[in-house]
Length: 321
Image 1 (cartoon, rainbow, N blue to C red):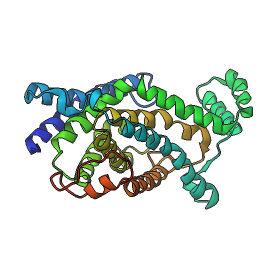
Image 2 (image 1 turned 135 degrees about the horizontal axis):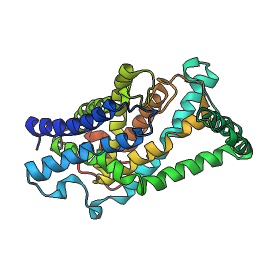
Image 3 (image 1 turned 180 degrees about the horizontal axis):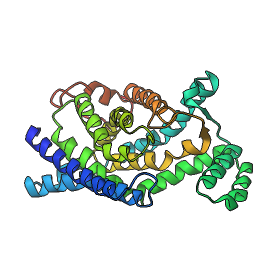
Image 4 (image 1 turned 90 degrees about the vertical axis):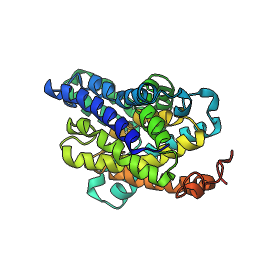
């Protein structure tokens, strides 16, 4: 049941935990280029889950059942559709860059080329930045590899990671956003829940954005862009949580996105950091397209989008209805 006090208490715990961890990191000079940044970012990800556990189990003393953790309740066809949806994001982002950058010559989008030659060039540049010039010869050998096959392998590895090593870290966020907060707003329409959860989720990232995450060189504008990005993503996440009836589906969605996003850096170049990335304008366009297609194909979710649950039709087992 929705209660402003419940939501405020959870958000205070989630933001307080994460921002304190990030603040401690900042005191020690940690930013995105620091060796300890990955550890700080990983610890920050557990803030929402810790807040959900404290709020749900210790303060409200409720059972685990409503947080969507039971594997037996997963609607597996929609978990599969979640994987398909996640795999479309990065390739579609590349198509946006190809159309707006390479074809229409909008310079901020830069360029993209899915080829072994481009991969070799990008890897060589990364090695040079790290002072590993001696390894650049090995990078040159990648030029003979087929670009499409490399991209496919990267996406498959992202799926594997999402179901294994990435899963605990994704649950660190999703148990909060699509676990407790989803339950706490369960009598809202999906549209209202997305409009609330998305910006909250984006602003929660603020300390990491200020450290250079996603938008290096743009700490303040980056917080705004991250809020837009998370709001657009929230539609996909809300759909996945609703239709799969489990928090594990958005965990997988989150893991695939995080695991595949680096492909843009391997095949794209010369784009502006606020534009030519999954979390930039190119990603925004891709997410708007995917969100529109999702609402077009899933009639059940579309018809419930602006309705509170008492008015919404019962979920149907098929994807297109």
